[in-house]
Image 1 (cartoon, one colour):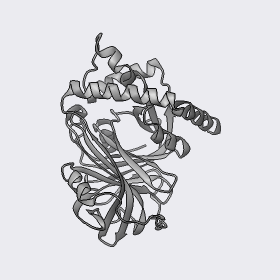
Image 2: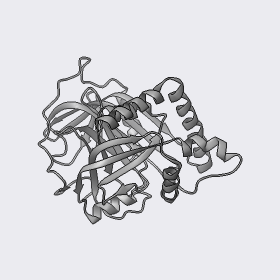
Image 3: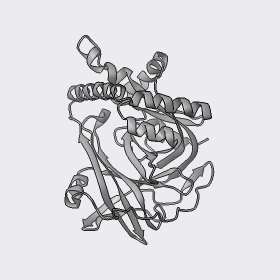
Image 4: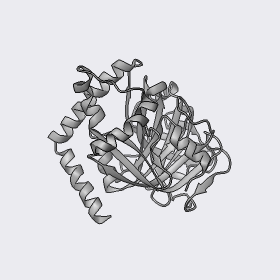
Length: 320
């Protein structure tokens, strides 16, 4: 059971940062809209995504340890100043029932605005509204800090946090930046919410806030609250994003790369970069979402991703 102030955040934030693990021992972090999904009595939280994000779903089915970081009160309903990190094991509902989709709709509209309906919108948004995937997380631990920068004494509901993990061996292609670092720093300068994710000591992802302090040929220089990132080097993910009410005007930039920590010197060398910008007008955003959702679902079914995910989900259910 998590505390009341954490529950207000989990139930009220417009967006959260979701992290999952990679086969190489790193973590990837991306923005999601949880829309208040949680069942406190059962100890579960969650969010929805699209079948088009097959690689992310496949990784979660292969290694279910995930994390959600509720890191900003912007445009949501929560008022507490807590930074909330939830860790747990994910299950993926690849084919939610009509009843579940209908039950979710009021929560989605509360956070994202009324659904569009009509002879034009219905076929355009069918995949976006109906071909949803639910990620359900059985919570193992909830960690809170008193500020959004995660400064101050933390509080833990669940097992104590493990010791910080040991350093990882460097990748064979080196640890330095592999993308244009000046361009990356410029992309991050206009997006205020920034987070680092890495594999923790017990295998769960850890997601913590970071501030950009500058950059040089070695990578991005970061400011992170004391004790949040382990010393040495390791694979890590980085997320920076900005958004308006109802997630209109969403801008996001995600990286994978190498995190190096030596005392207060925290540096991140990005190796890969992905991002997008959603239009700041609701109708244009919905058209874009509808087209991308339809294309993603079509591609997942055509290239065998949907079948592979269903097989993995069945194996997980059998093992569990």
